[in-house]
Length: 76
Image (cartoon, rainbow, N blue to C red; front, side):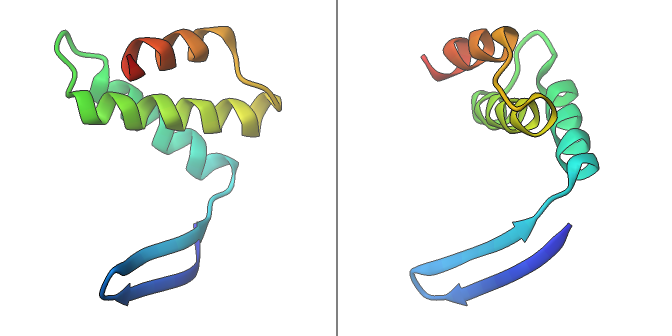
């Protein structure tokens, strides 16, 4: 991970980072395992689904069907 920009100004807090394939894969996998229990936390489920989408785009160049199904399930 490369941190490109950090802002801690009032009403403008955020960071711009560059993630490589391994970073995206590891974060997506960690979030998947965190949310794979019987009652996953709703907020983590949404974040996990978004990272799965990002991972699909990085790895395959398109979103995979199982990721679309997961997004539909967690976002509804």
